[in-house]
Length: 192
Image 1 (tube, rainbow, N blue to C red):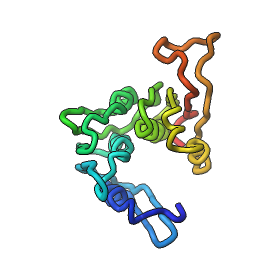
Image 2: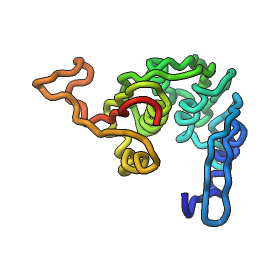
Image 3: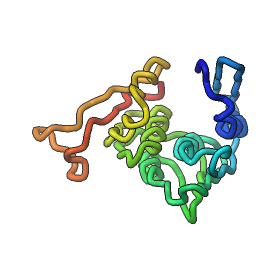
């Protein structure tokens, strides 16, 4: 990533390093490389300059595949765990209680049809879907579109295989709780 605001991302970059992700940065460039060994962590979302609450869902998605037990707490919005039931549909092992999520890393996630509840959850579900085996379909991605312009296009440039598909029409109805939803995203095939 060019011209990345690494000073503002210090808490995020430090958390990634703690998990075992290699982070290289200089004045103009940020490079993030997944390590072979990942480690469970305890993270707490706090006001700036702490770990942003806006990154909490994405870290939980990552930690679902990290061996061991991790804990993610949110002191800014302690009830912001609406993405967890959707990650559970994909095979994650997460328990939420009192503003914290206890994540027991699993060996793999399985593609599923999931529903985005907000912007942060949408991004987390896309990341989990990319890591999952099989096809993941994300409904209600209008939340994602509010904060990430052309997200699937950018990820496809990096090697992802994401297709934006229209929601089922009246000729091919979806389950009642999906009727009238905006377009969805669908990952095609296995891991990228």
